[in-house]
Amino acid sequence: MTRRAVIQGVGSALPQRRVDNAELAVQVDTSDEWIVERTGIRTRYIAGEGETTATLAAEACRRALAEAGMEPGEIDLIVLATATPDQTFPSSATKVQAMLGIADCIAFDVHAVCTGFLYALSVADAMIRAGNASSALVIGAETFSRILDWEDRGTCVLFGDGAGAVVLKAEEGGTRGILATRLHADGRHGDMLYVDGGPSTTGTVGKLRMKGREVFRHAVVNLADVLNEVLEVAGLTSDQVDWVVPHQANARIIDATARKLGLSPERVVLTVDRHANTSAASVPLALDVAVKDGRIKQGDCVVLEAMGGGFTWGAAALRF
Ligand code: ACO
Image (cartoon, rainbow, N blue to C red; front, side, top):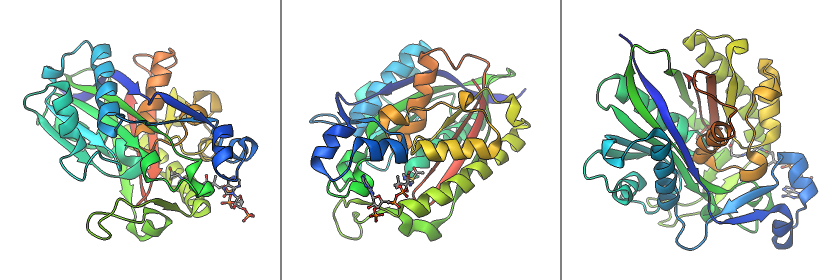
């Protein structure tokens, strides 16, 4: 019998403070019109005092567990994707574990920037299928506001903070669950999107730097390729896909990728307008929105995709 990892619950959490484009235009030389036209972003949430990657992640997990009807003690694996951990160590996954009051389970962070959730999902799926875990929390959580250069209008308008989580549970013999995942990385492009600091180099946290145009160009090509690839591995055609939940970096990247694959925009979940780019949190945040508003239903065929610094990129196909 095939053993698969099935999503039993989804949850998300956002900081309290919402910041619209007009508010940013007071700080840097930009405008609501420019940001909306180039990116589709209208608002983002920015973490305040006491709000961290781990606190947002823990709240997203509580909501996902409630939706799954499960207690924290039933979880035996936590994989948290982030590029903005609370501390260099311990991992944010172990902080979330402690916040949820889980005495003993496997817990670790993965780091693939905006593709982090796809990497985390793929690792958790493999561990569940191999029998190393039966239930998992897979989290994407970020506080990118803390690594932004708030004087660089080319980057500070693009990102926001937040967290999303899914509860995975092993099921034998059903039709639901993760059908296929595909991951990629090409470190030769590390200088196109990076942070100019780190524990082993500058001893500082650093700030995000990006060559936006080059990132855009690579994103459309890589995302279309990996979507085709994951559909082929899962034995699906694009017209069998009910919903695409893309990484929410830029509405133009999302539109261009959907067009390249011949996917109708009505089947693409778009939340970049309200959350901006929340890096590893963006896919589970968007998934949660579409599940809660009733668009994504049990049994639907859903495809997730993301691309980020590294470069890294990946996709997953699942029956929800
Ligand atoms: N407000 C007003 N003007 C701005 C702003 C701003 N916030 N930012 C840049 N500009 C100006 C530039 O200075 C430039 O002015 P100039 O022509 O006088 O030199 C002009 O706008 C055009 O700049 P470009 O960078 O060429 O603008 P572009 O059309 O490429 O849009 C953007 C920039 C939105 C960053 C785009 O390149 C993009 O979305 N790239 C993808 C980046 C991305 O999504 N990264 C996220 C991480 S990776 C990922 O998640 C996929």
